[in-house]
Length: 421
Image 1: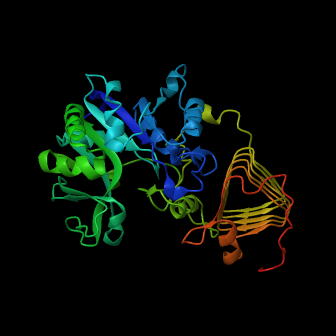
Image 2: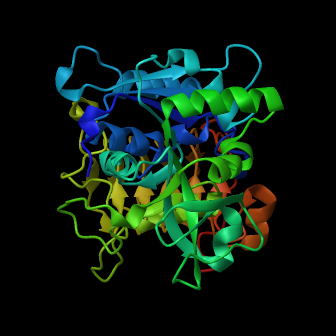
Image 3: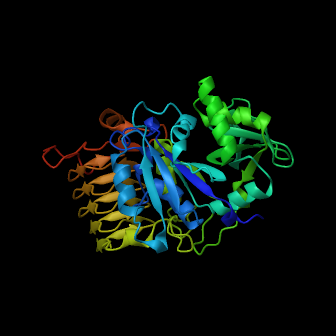
């Protein structure tokens, strides 16, 4: 396979979507800036993958509510003095009219691409996975592709949620359709279709020409506009994500894990995937594998360990500097600096950074966003009718407590702590 080091590469990470399906979590911050698994942000996965793959820089294209994301990039991913972690993620925005689509976002930043660049990578910022991008680039070079789309198989019944790549037996794309209702199965696998992961490798010269053509035609999006046409005119190859060979030390149940966390239900489920079950099983995905660290080592410097005073912690992840005081946390993720009061019970939930949960409170199958101080003996996730009146409830029954719902100044009458047990 061709040596990726011989290619001159420029990388764009698209982090500009408004994340409307994740509201109210995205009412204050964009989707890539959302916390994930206590000690990470969603964008850390794509940046970590690029960094560990030997790709030292990226332009992060931002748009909606970018302030928290930009702050995170500056704190974690920008340190020109640190040669060992040669990682410089720079945020670039629309500086004027908003981007009209993914292709428009890249087209309006093409001036940042040096004329001598061979390949342009365009990767999404809102997926949870581990990937050696160098292997995908090697595949692109070895197959003589002009465009490579990373793919993974999905059941035909789920194909309408993805961009679908239809290929021949050699893996060459013959058709690309965005979220088709009648997706065709991949060769030899009648029950599966090949879904795009939203990660692309383009020949730089071709991309410049096609973006100019798209702009003249009023086309703005890769999935809806450019890729369907490129498949007919160019050599577009489908890269099978499952062909990745990636060493690791953490045992998991799904070595080629990938998840789009574009909905509240998917965001909650992805967190649950990182937890071992209560019977000693293995998680589907392990973010902390030391063989493939997702963040620069400096990002963790100075983090205080969590304090777990006399608490019952089962199959859970507790963030740095969190405090759990004689409470029970089962199959949950507790964010950095969060506080769980005496006698509280948190089950199958995601608690954001800095949240305070009062004594005796009970929270089940919930996402508790930032800037919340849950009153003592409060009950969330036990009465669906009451929860729907007060909060957002997903179709899966996950209760979402929006940012700032409970504040320290509130004096609410606590719910009956014995009801519904």
